[in-house]
Length: 170
Image (cartoon, rainbow, N blue to C red; front, side, top):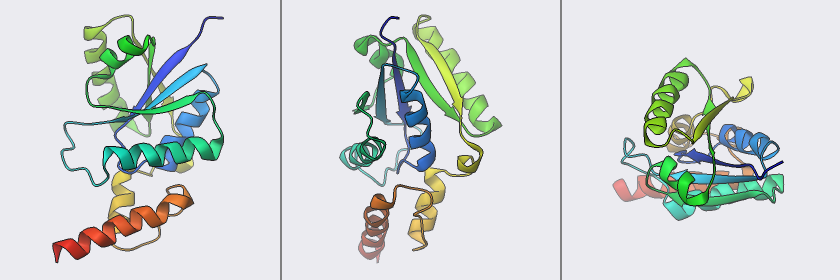
């Protein structure tokens, strides 16, 4: 069997159990997985820096003790990154039909750049389907518990970030 590599980009700000679960399951199907802290130009306001996001993502990789996952960041198109890393696959996670429509359009655009890079979609587990980074940020902003949505070791970092942002705005 040839070396199968895949890129799983997320713009999760912060990354959630849903993102991590897809990453972990995909790591069992591929020899190498690049978990990418991607910059989404449609989401101009980022709460967490690139360094903070990659650190949080690495915490999930360490939690699952995955040796075949590399956490990196990238701000360009994923197809160009796939070409640079010599990977043939992009992974996208799906929670619902809205995600499906967006990913279908993205896959079509990516195919227009390089028809040899395939997009593969994985469905989230049902209990992760309602988790989003937006939900986590809103709960954290309100000072509510978020430990069921993110790795417990990240909750203090996330809640502190919002507490500090609130103090700065006052």
